Amino acid sequence: MKEERPDFKDIHSFEEFNLYYWYREELSQICKSLGLEYRGTKQELNDIIHQYFLGNKIEKSVNKRNQKQVEVITLNTPLLHCGFSFNQKFRDYFSAVTGISPFKFNADMATAWRKVKKDKDITFTIQDMIKIYYGESNYAKYDSSACQWNQFLKDFCSDECSNVYSNKLKVASILWKEVRNSTNEKIYSRELLKENENKLMEYRKNTDSNLSSSI
Image (cartoon, rainbow, N blue to C red; front, side, top):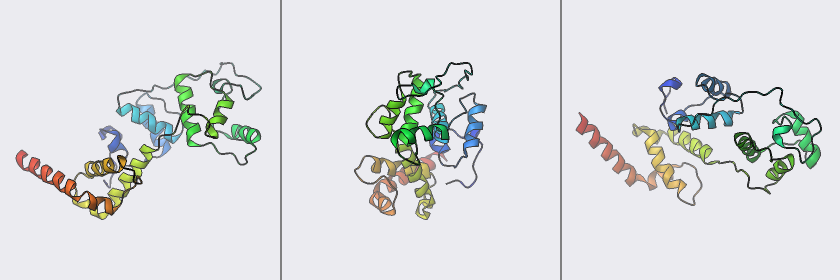
C-alpha cells in the first residue's frame, strides 16, 4: 500500500480510492466539491463516491423545510413523513416499541433507509423498519462484500510477502476472485498466497514480458 495518500483528483478508480483511509468529514468535502449529496453517514458517503466512479452522480438533495410532517408517530407512519433519522429520538421510540434497551440500528436498517430515500418510497412505514430489524423482510439487505474486499486488500498489502509485487491492487484482486468464488471464508491469508503461487507467477511473468517489450 502506498505510504502517502494522493489528492482525490489524482485517484482514478474506486478500488484505488479504497486503498486509503478517509474520515467522514473528508468524504463529505469530496462529495460537496463534486456537486454530490454530502450529507449522511460515512457508509452513505462512501456509496455515493462509489457510484460517482461508476458514472452515476447522486446530486445533493434540497431540504424541504416546509414539508408537512406528522406530529404523532405510529407504526403505520411512513418514514418519509416523520422526519426519521438515526438519532436518539428514534432510538428511544424503537426501544419503547420493541422493549429492547439500549436499541441499536443495524446495517440492514441503514440500507433500507437509503433505499427509501433513493426511491422516495412513501409506503415504507415504521412497522416495515421494525420487520427489517427482526430480519422478517427482504426489502433491503446490507452488502458486506465491499467491506470484506476492503479488509482483504488491507491485510494483503500489510503482509511483507506482498512487497515482491509492484501492482498490489492487481494481485489482491486475483486472490480475491479465488476467495469470492469459493465457499471459504472471505479473508486473506498466506496460505491463499501459496495456493495460488502458480497463477501469480504467470501474472508476474506476463507483466515482466510486457514491461520488457515496452522498453
